[in-house]
Image (cartoon, rainbow, N blue to C red):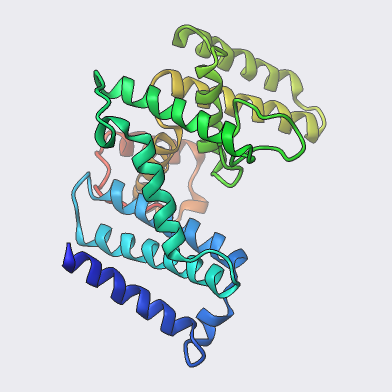
Length: 277
């Protein structure tokens, strides 16, 4: 534990120096508005490292977690410099929350398994929101609380759609099985066909409904849509590169030639760890 505390303290000291009077001009110029972009970017780098590692604790994952941690400390330091909360407040807040939401660990309240843990967690979270009366992340100021509150608007659209669908499902607003979600996708696809060649605004709306229906189908089949799409993008890039290799003068090739090579490329397993541009 001493080693962990010492390492975290050294990192905090470095961040303090970078933000200090004789620190780095770039770090001193950053604001919390800037940090939203950097935290998001580093979080995605962590996700890439997690998925690229095949679930292994790789050196790359260690490095990306470090980058994310630095940005968390920097954001907290900027807040402290503005006379608000510090990293100590951040750490205290999450520590107290973890203790409150794990009574089966810290308050000797037995549980039967993971399902009961999640049920208790959600009940405690709801009680906390009721006491504070604060707007949850993703809530709407000036409007009554919604069961959809708590899903950040800044989430990537696929993830936000998935989480909103999951919240609605908890309230019973859901199909009993995947067949309803399949039918909804077919229904929305037909709506897109009917919108053609209509005005762009209507077409955009129908395509949005189709995407949302596809996300809900993923949810009903217990597949994360972002992971499914990342996998599809990886396969697309790998196969397209194979088409380029077979047809160097791609722009001069016919569509039939490209399709034949594409179909052949589909039978070749993708290269593991292939980067997606």
